[in-house]
Length: 326
Image 1 (tube, helix red, strand yellow):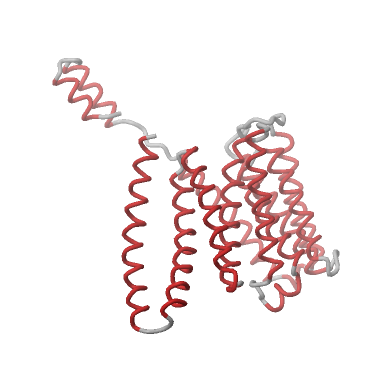
Image 2 (tube, rainbow, N blue to C red):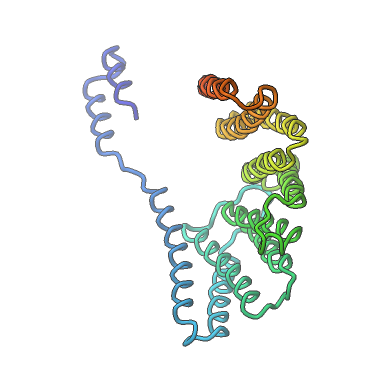
Protein backbone atom coordinates (compact mmCIF):
# COMPACT_ATOMS: atom_id res chain seq x y z
CA UNK A 1 0.00 0.00 0.00
CA UNK A 2 1.01 3.61 -0.60
CA UNK A 3 -0.25 6.12 2.05
CA UNK A 4 0.87 9.26 0.10
CA UNK A 5 -1.15 8.02 -2.86
CA UNK A 6 -4.24 7.70 -0.64
CA UNK A 7 -3.76 11.26 0.55
CA UNK A 8 -3.65 12.51 -3.04
CA UNK A 9 -6.78 10.56 -3.86
CA UNK A 10 -8.59 12.13 -0.91
CA UNK A 11 -7.34 15.61 -1.86
CA UNK A 12 -8.67 15.07 -5.40
CA UNK A 13 -11.99 13.82 -3.98
CA UNK A 14 -11.49 10.42 -5.57
CA UNK A 15 -12.16 8.65 -2.26
CA UNK A 16 -14.20 9.67 0.77
CA UNK A 17 -12.82 10.43 4.22
CA UNK A 18 -14.32 7.20 5.51
CA UNK A 19 -12.58 5.14 2.81
CA UNK A 20 -9.32 6.95 3.52
CA UNK A 21 -9.59 6.10 7.25
CA UNK A 22 -10.23 2.44 6.47
CA UNK A 23 -7.21 2.32 4.13
CA UNK A 24 -5.02 3.94 6.76
CA UNK A 25 -6.19 1.44 9.39
CA UNK A 26 -5.51 -1.46 7.03
CA UNK A 27 -2.02 -0.14 6.35
CA UNK A 28 -1.23 0.16 10.07
CA UNK A 29 -2.48 -3.35 10.84
CA UNK A 30 -0.91 -5.03 7.79
CA UNK A 31 0.87 -8.31 8.53
CA UNK A 32 4.64 -8.43 8.14
CA UNK A 33 6.05 -11.31 6.10
CA UNK A 34 8.71 -13.45 7.79
CA UNK A 35 9.20 -15.66 4.74
CA UNK A 36 12.87 -14.92 4.05
CA UNK A 37 13.75 -14.71 7.75
CA UNK A 38 12.34 -18.19 8.36
CA UNK A 39 14.01 -19.61 5.25
CA UNK A 40 17.35 -18.17 6.37
CA UNK A 41 16.92 -19.71 9.82
CA UNK A 42 16.09 -23.11 8.30
CA UNK A 43 19.14 -23.02 6.03
CA UNK A 44 21.28 -21.95 8.97
CA UNK A 45 19.79 -24.80 11.00
CA UNK A 46 20.78 -27.36 8.34
CA UNK A 47 24.34 -26.00 8.22
CA UNK A 48 24.59 -25.99 12.03
CA UNK A 49 23.36 -29.58 12.21
CA UNK A 50 25.92 -30.66 9.59
CA UNK A 51 28.73 -28.76 11.30
CA UNK A 52 27.71 -29.95 14.76
CA UNK A 53 27.71 -33.57 13.65
CA UNK A 54 31.15 -33.11 12.16
CA UNK A 55 32.54 -31.64 15.39
CA UNK A 56 30.88 -34.34 17.49
CA UNK A 57 32.32 -37.09 15.34
CA UNK A 58 35.78 -35.47 15.28
CA UNK A 59 35.98 -35.24 19.06
CA UNK A 60 34.62 -38.74 19.74
CA UNK A 61 35.96 -40.71 16.80
CA UNK A 62 38.06 -43.01 19.01
CA UNK A 63 35.06 -44.14 21.04
CA UNK A 64 32.54 -44.21 18.19
CA UNK A 65 34.50 -45.92 15.44
CA UNK A 66 34.79 -45.11 11.74
CA UNK A 67 32.33 -47.75 10.58
CA UNK A 68 29.63 -46.51 12.95
CA UNK A 69 30.18 -42.93 11.78
CA UNK A 70 29.88 -43.92 8.12
CA UNK A 71 26.71 -45.90 8.80
CA UNK A 72 25.22 -42.94 10.68
CA UNK A 73 26.00 -40.47 7.86
CA UNK A 74 24.67 -42.91 5.26
CA UNK A 75 21.46 -43.38 7.27
CA UNK A 76 20.86 -39.61 7.39
CA UNK A 77 21.43 -39.28 3.66
CA UNK A 78 19.25 -42.26 2.74
CA UNK A 79 16.43 -41.16 5.03
CA UNK A 80 16.47 -37.70 3.50
CA UNK A 81 16.41 -39.01 -0.08
CA UNK A 82 13.62 -41.50 0.71
CA UNK A 83 11.53 -38.65 2.12
CA UNK A 84 12.24 -36.47 -0.92
CA UNK A 85 11.36 -39.20 -3.40
CA UNK A 86 8.06 -39.82 -1.64
CA UNK A 87 7.09 -36.15 -1.45
CA UNK A 88 8.52 -34.87 -4.74
CA UNK A 89 6.22 -33.81 -7.55
CA UNK A 90 6.57 -35.59 -10.93
CA UNK A 91 9.62 -34.48 -12.89
CA UNK A 92 9.10 -31.72 -15.41
CA UNK A 93 11.31 -29.67 -17.69
CA UNK A 94 9.63 -26.54 -16.29
CA UNK A 95 10.05 -25.13 -12.82
CA UNK A 96 8.53 -27.31 -10.08
CA UNK A 97 7.58 -25.89 -6.70
CA UNK A 98 8.51 -27.68 -3.50
CA UNK A 99 5.63 -29.79 -2.13
CA UNK A 100 5.99 -28.37 1.39
CA UNK A 101 8.09 -25.79 3.28
CA UNK A 102 10.50 -28.41 4.65
CA UNK A 103 11.29 -30.27 1.43
CA UNK A 104 14.22 -28.11 0.29
CA UNK A 105 15.96 -28.31 3.66
CA UNK A 106 15.60 -32.09 3.96
CA UNK A 107 17.05 -32.43 0.46
CA UNK A 108 19.92 -30.10 1.31
CA UNK A 109 20.73 -32.11 4.45
CA UNK A 110 20.60 -35.38 2.48
CA UNK A 111 23.00 -34.06 -0.17
CA UNK A 112 25.40 -32.63 2.40
CA UNK A 113 25.41 -35.97 4.20
CA UNK A 114 26.02 -37.78 0.89
CA UNK A 115 29.03 -35.57 0.07
CA UNK A 116 30.37 -36.03 3.62
CA UNK A 117 29.95 -39.78 3.29
CA UNK A 118 31.91 -39.90 0.02
CA UNK A 119 34.68 -37.68 1.38
CA UNK A 120 34.94 -39.60 4.65
CA UNK A 121 34.99 -42.92 2.80
CA UNK A 122 37.87 -41.80 0.62
CA UNK A 123 39.81 -40.17 3.47
CA UNK A 124 39.57 -43.09 5.88
CA UNK A 125 39.49 -46.16 3.64
CA UNK A 126 40.95 -44.85 0.33
CA UNK A 127 38.23 -46.61 -1.64
CA UNK A 128 39.26 -44.83 -4.84
CA UNK A 129 42.99 -45.12 -4.15
CA UNK A 130 44.98 -42.24 -5.65
CA UNK A 131 42.21 -41.42 -8.15
CA UNK A 132 41.08 -38.24 -6.41
CA UNK A 133 39.17 -37.15 -9.50
CA UNK A 134 36.89 -40.18 -9.24
CA UNK A 135 36.21 -39.39 -5.57
CA UNK A 136 34.76 -36.02 -6.63
CA UNK A 137 33.24 -37.15 -9.96
CA UNK A 138 30.70 -39.58 -8.47
CA UNK A 139 29.27 -37.12 -5.89
CA UNK A 140 29.17 -34.48 -8.64
CA UNK A 141 26.97 -36.71 -10.84
CA UNK A 142 24.65 -37.47 -7.92
CA UNK A 143 24.35 -33.77 -7.10
CA UNK A 144 23.48 -32.86 -10.70
CA UNK A 145 20.90 -35.65 -10.80
CA UNK A 146 19.34 -34.48 -7.53
CA UNK A 147 19.34 -30.83 -8.66
CA UNK A 148 17.47 -31.63 -11.88
CA UNK A 149 15.12 -34.26 -10.50
CA UNK A 150 14.07 -32.26 -7.44
CA UNK A 151 14.50 -28.83 -9.07
CA UNK A 152 16.78 -27.28 -6.45
CA UNK A 153 19.05 -24.30 -7.23
CA UNK A 154 21.09 -24.78 -4.06
CA UNK A 155 21.97 -28.36 -4.99
CA UNK A 156 22.80 -27.19 -8.51
CA UNK A 157 25.30 -24.73 -7.01
CA UNK A 158 26.86 -27.57 -5.01
CA UNK A 159 27.06 -29.69 -8.17
CA UNK A 160 28.78 -26.92 -10.14
CA UNK A 161 31.25 -26.42 -7.29
CA UNK A 162 31.96 -30.16 -7.34
CA UNK A 163 32.43 -29.95 -11.13
CA UNK A 164 35.04 -27.21 -10.73
CA UNK A 165 36.81 -29.22 -8.03
CA UNK A 166 36.79 -32.32 -10.22
CA UNK A 167 38.17 -30.39 -13.21
CA UNK A 168 41.01 -28.92 -11.15
CA UNK A 169 41.92 -32.14 -9.36
CA UNK A 170 41.77 -34.20 -12.56
CA UNK A 171 44.19 -31.87 -14.33
CA UNK A 172 46.81 -31.27 -11.63
CA UNK A 173 46.09 -33.38 -8.54
CA UNK A 174 49.48 -33.57 -6.84
CA UNK A 175 50.61 -30.08 -7.88
CA UNK A 176 47.55 -28.49 -6.31
CA UNK A 177 47.47 -30.63 -3.20
CA UNK A 178 51.20 -30.48 -2.45
CA UNK A 179 52.80 -27.47 -4.16
CA UNK A 180 49.83 -25.06 -4.32
CA UNK A 181 50.85 -24.19 -7.88
CA UNK A 182 47.75 -22.27 -8.93
CA UNK A 183 49.64 -20.67 -11.83
CA UNK A 184 49.81 -23.99 -13.63
CA UNK A 185 48.99 -23.74 -17.34
CA UNK A 186 46.76 -26.80 -17.31
CA UNK A 187 44.74 -25.41 -14.42
CA UNK A 188 44.08 -22.14 -16.26
CA UNK A 189 43.03 -24.01 -19.39
CA UNK A 190 40.80 -26.30 -17.32
CA UNK A 191 39.17 -23.25 -15.78
CA UNK A 192 38.45 -21.71 -19.18
CA UNK A 193 37.08 -24.97 -20.60
CA UNK A 194 34.88 -25.53 -17.53
CA UNK A 195 33.58 -21.96 -17.68
CA UNK A 196 32.71 -22.30 -21.37
CA UNK A 197 30.93 -25.56 -20.59
CA UNK A 198 28.86 -23.86 -17.88
CA UNK A 199 27.94 -21.01 -20.22
CA UNK A 200 26.97 -23.55 -22.90
CA UNK A 201 24.78 -25.33 -20.35
CA UNK A 202 23.15 -21.99 -19.52
CA UNK A 203 22.39 -21.32 -23.18
CA UNK A 204 21.05 -24.84 -23.74
CA UNK A 205 18.82 -24.68 -20.67
CA UNK A 206 17.03 -21.67 -22.15
CA UNK A 207 17.12 -22.80 -25.78
CA UNK A 208 15.79 -26.29 -25.00
CA UNK A 209 13.52 -25.05 -22.18
CA UNK A 210 14.90 -27.70 -19.84
CA UNK A 211 14.95 -26.12 -16.39
CA UNK A 212 15.33 -22.71 -18.01
CA UNK A 213 15.43 -21.05 -14.57
CA UNK A 214 18.83 -22.73 -14.03
CA UNK A 215 20.21 -20.30 -16.62
CA UNK A 216 21.31 -17.64 -14.16
CA UNK A 217 23.10 -20.08 -11.82
CA UNK A 218 25.10 -21.55 -14.71
CA UNK A 219 25.84 -18.08 -16.06
CA UNK A 220 26.91 -16.76 -12.67
CA UNK A 221 29.44 -19.53 -12.04
CA UNK A 222 30.67 -19.56 -15.64
CA UNK A 223 31.10 -15.78 -15.72
CA UNK A 224 33.20 -15.62 -12.55
CA UNK A 225 35.30 -18.65 -13.49
CA UNK A 226 35.97 -17.39 -17.03
CA UNK A 227 36.99 -13.91 -15.93
CA UNK A 228 39.24 -15.26 -13.16
CA UNK A 229 40.90 -17.77 -15.50
CA UNK A 230 41.58 -15.16 -18.20
CA UNK A 231 42.93 -12.70 -15.63
CA UNK A 232 45.14 -15.44 -14.20
CA UNK A 233 46.43 -16.13 -17.70
CA UNK A 234 47.29 -12.47 -18.22
CA UNK A 235 49.20 -12.37 -14.93
CA UNK A 236 51.01 -15.69 -15.39
CA UNK A 237 51.94 -15.34 -19.08
CA UNK A 238 53.40 -11.85 -19.01
CA UNK A 239 54.88 -12.06 -22.50
CA UNK A 240 51.42 -12.38 -24.05
CA UNK A 241 49.43 -10.29 -21.57
CA UNK A 242 48.04 -8.04 -24.32
CA UNK A 243 46.47 -11.02 -26.12
CA UNK A 244 44.85 -12.06 -22.85
CA UNK A 245 43.55 -8.51 -22.44
CA UNK A 246 41.98 -8.67 -25.90
CA UNK A 247 40.28 -11.92 -24.89
CA UNK A 248 39.10 -10.25 -21.67
CA UNK A 249 37.65 -7.37 -23.71
CA UNK A 250 35.71 -9.76 -25.93
CA UNK A 251 34.35 -11.64 -22.91
CA UNK A 252 33.35 -8.37 -21.22
CA UNK A 253 31.49 -7.27 -24.37
CA UNK A 254 29.64 -10.59 -24.52
CA UNK A 255 28.43 -10.27 -20.94
CA UNK A 256 27.61 -6.60 -21.57
CA UNK A 257 25.15 -7.70 -24.24
CA UNK A 258 23.75 -10.32 -21.83
CA UNK A 259 23.32 -7.70 -19.12
CA UNK A 260 21.46 -5.37 -21.48
CA UNK A 261 19.30 -8.18 -22.85
CA UNK A 262 18.19 -9.36 -19.42
CA UNK A 263 18.37 -5.94 -17.71
CA UNK A 264 20.74 -7.35 -15.08
CA UNK A 265 22.76 -4.77 -13.17
CA UNK A 266 24.47 -7.60 -11.26
CA UNK A 267 26.04 -9.03 -14.44
CA UNK A 268 27.01 -5.53 -15.52
CA UNK A 269 28.65 -4.82 -12.16
CA UNK A 270 30.62 -8.09 -12.18
CA UNK A 271 31.94 -7.68 -15.73
CA UNK A 272 32.85 -4.04 -15.03
CA UNK A 273 34.91 -4.96 -11.97
CA UNK A 274 36.79 -7.77 -13.72
CA UNK A 275 37.38 -5.69 -16.85
CA UNK A 276 38.60 -2.76 -14.74
CA UNK A 277 41.14 -5.05 -13.04
CA UNK A 278 42.41 -6.31 -16.39
CA UNK A 279 42.44 -2.82 -17.91
CA UNK A 280 44.32 -1.35 -14.96
CA UNK A 281 46.92 -4.12 -15.03
CA UNK A 282 47.42 -3.61 -18.78
CA UNK A 283 47.64 0.17 -18.48
CA UNK A 284 50.22 -0.04 -15.71
CA UNK A 285 52.31 -2.49 -17.69
CA UNK A 286 52.23 -0.26 -20.77
CA UNK A 287 52.95 2.79 -18.65
CA UNK A 288 55.99 1.31 -16.93
CA UNK A 289 57.22 -0.30 -20.16
CA UNK A 290 57.18 3.05 -21.96
CA UNK A 291 58.43 5.32 -19.19
CA UNK A 292 60.41 2.70 -17.27
CA UNK A 293 60.64 3.42 -13.54
CA UNK A 294 60.62 6.93 -12.16
CA UNK A 295 58.53 9.63 -10.56
CA UNK A 296 56.75 10.43 -13.80
CA UNK A 297 55.33 6.95 -14.23
CA UNK A 298 54.19 6.89 -10.59
CA UNK A 299 52.39 10.24 -10.91
CA UNK A 300 50.72 9.12 -14.12
CA UNK A 301 49.63 5.91 -12.41
CA UNK A 302 48.00 7.91 -9.60
CA UNK A 303 46.26 10.15 -12.14
CA UNK A 304 45.04 7.09 -14.03
CA UNK A 305 43.49 5.52 -10.94
CA UNK A 306 41.79 8.78 -9.93
CA UNK A 307 40.39 9.42 -13.40
CA UNK A 308 39.40 5.80 -14.05
CA UNK A 309 37.68 5.50 -10.66
CA UNK A 310 35.54 8.56 -11.40
CA UNK A 311 34.74 7.25 -14.89
CA UNK A 312 33.87 3.84 -13.44
CA UNK A 313 31.39 5.29 -10.94
CA UNK A 314 29.76 7.52 -13.56
CA UNK A 315 29.47 4.58 -15.96
CA UNK A 316 27.78 2.37 -13.35
CA UNK A 317 25.36 5.14 -12.35
CA UNK A 318 24.42 5.78 -15.97
CA UNK A 319 23.96 2.10 -16.78
CA UNK A 320 21.94 1.52 -13.62
CA UNK A 321 19.50 4.24 -14.67
CA UNK A 322 19.35 2.83 -18.19
CA UNK A 323 18.62 -0.70 -17.02
CA UNK A 324 15.98 0.49 -14.56
CA UNK A 325 14.23 2.58 -17.19
CA UNK A 326 14.21 -0.44 -19.53
